[in-house]
Image 1 (tube, rainbow, N blue to C red):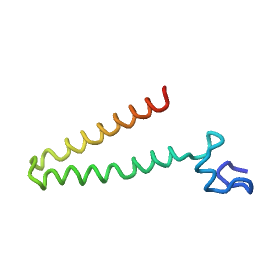
Image 2: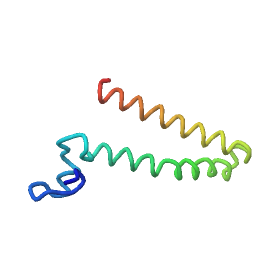
Image 3: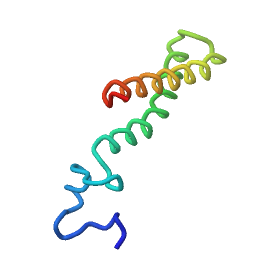
Image 4: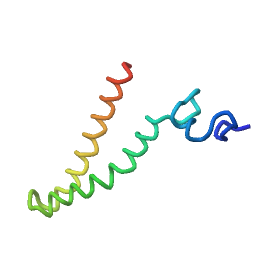
Length: 86
């Protein structure tokens, strides 16, 4: 039976919260997916909001978006490094 199927002794909710092997999703994996799913649209809106507020010209929107994306990746990887100790 595939690992993804819930068993009678462990419901789906418990599988996602308390991973028992590498194939089970964890709360951290859900948080990571949610961050990366929501970060790009948020950074696009923030980059355009700066242009709409008159902080910089339209030609600067893409470099601002790139800076936000790269900066967030650096912060996330640094946080993962500190939390996991690796």
